[in-house]
Image (cartoon, rainbow, N blue to C red; front, side):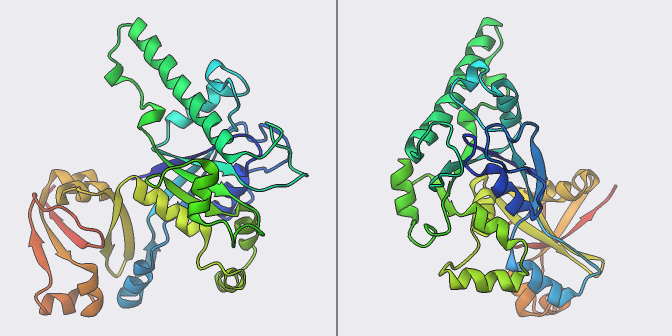
Length: 324
């Protein structure tokens, strides 16, 4: 199940730099002029999950497949986008195709990188983007009313999408810009999802090994990569959890919406699994690790047989029985 997160914001706020860091590529061009990104860049990003490695250490599979989130780097939005200004219509179309929005807000000062509004003001910039999305929603609703179509049946509106705010700061700011301060400068409330990130720093980290990157972050006084926090926030904001399948051929993490039944989870692997679902054999992650794998958990009486009404839990290791 591919989760699509659209990276949006005004031009020159660091969207493409963030995308490059997320995907550990230089695939998106980042330059000092508006609309550097025209057609969206798309990249698959692994969901950081230390549980996966522990399962690998126990099972020793031939292949490992982590859960992923798809990030889409979309062209910068400007005032009047809802009316077609800039790349307005194309921009709005691309946003409607994603499940959630990562709204990049510029918090860094850099005289070498122009700001389309002429100054740095995170709250103003956030409101500009949100106003354009809101106006686009209203125009769509009005158009469909005129066409006598039910508003409820239209394509997903922006107001219905979950949003993560990524406040992009400089390397010098990364130590001092707390989440509370980021909320203050952007005018966001405590219930809104905010991540502080230095996109340029994260992009530079891709040239280092994982261990070198950890050491470098530690020297900066940063506990973890901003990218890891952003990816986890994106994963969580959509209400997703992870279940695993683990065997000698592969250990794999799967995305499902919280509250998914066992047959629904089986269907994520293959539609035939859901159609012919018989039962699910479930081991909780902690039990799988504690007892050294499937056989040990089974001997300890920790393998459960669940039916169609079972609701999957985060970390479940599952084996589905089905009849085609």
